[in-house]
Length: 282
Image (tube, rainbow, N blue to C red; front, top):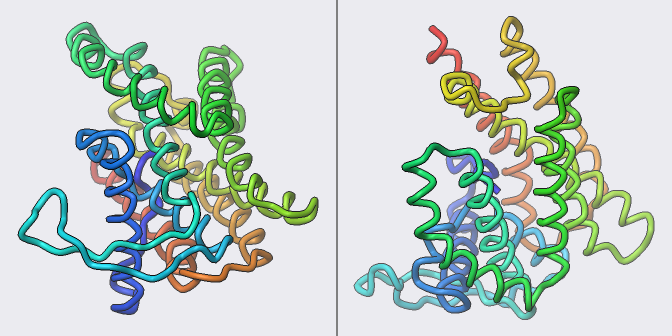
């Protein structure tokens, strides 16, 4: 995941923002505890959202505690206490996705960057192996996503839908794992698909100018003459799909924060990326 699932801080209550930070810091702590201090550098908003969403569905948040920050021992941070494996699952997903992303970067980068990526790969490989042993289903879903992504992007007939499908399908499967009935499964799957599609497309839109310059794959290349309209329409469609399903999901904890992300955070990210790309073009 790429760090696009964010809150709109100005619209959060103070207590909601503190709770949000406690989940983020709790995930950071889990990464350091389960994998290594270095693994904390792959911490992302997206996996913090995943941890929060799991805890909300399972009602597994047991409050908060203050402890010293591992990065700054002179500072105390609030950490979310989780009664199940939600935060550890999110930490495992973080390192698994980081590993497959690194593999993709090695394949797509130039000579000097490839050398750098290969130097750090043993660390990522060790983390991913440990995470996959604990959560083999997460690794299987992520591996299938990467295989599908490469196949789609190497196809001469690749369309926007084909390119976005593997990432959307991955998050669809990850969220659907939490369903306790067939009906819930369809709802969770559709919600995950919409969010996953949004993440892939917003990342592609954000990288558009860089990919054009480097002659790398980007699904929006055929739409150079209608870039903003095409990006805006597809992102809004993905958010509408996610929101339609989200309205049918019963959340226990963090609902105000997750509402903020879906209704305000993601549309704000969309606007920021389109504005940034518009300035680059000008």
